[in-house]
Image (cartoon, rainbow, N blue to C red; front, side, top):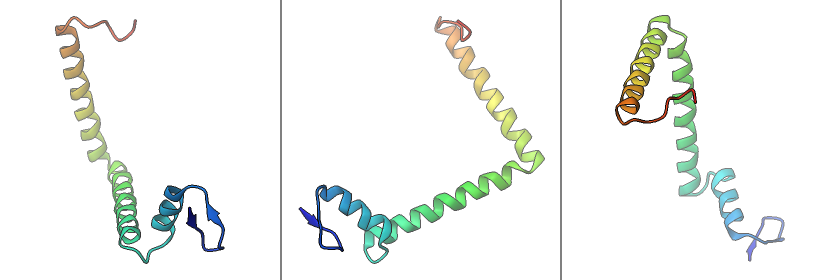
Length: 85
């Protein structure tokens, strides 16, 4: 069994390892986790900022609409059931 900082035995070594990676930045895995989390947060903020620009939002909506039409056309060509049933 893995030992926690308080000296208690941790019943799950995987849980102890995840705790060390997520909450400790002094390991290679911990630093990588922090970096990946930071990149994910930046990407999320960038998406929200870009979504607030009207021209970008309209283009994204148009692209999504085109993509949905292509998927629906492919579904009808394969003889798939309609989406409303």
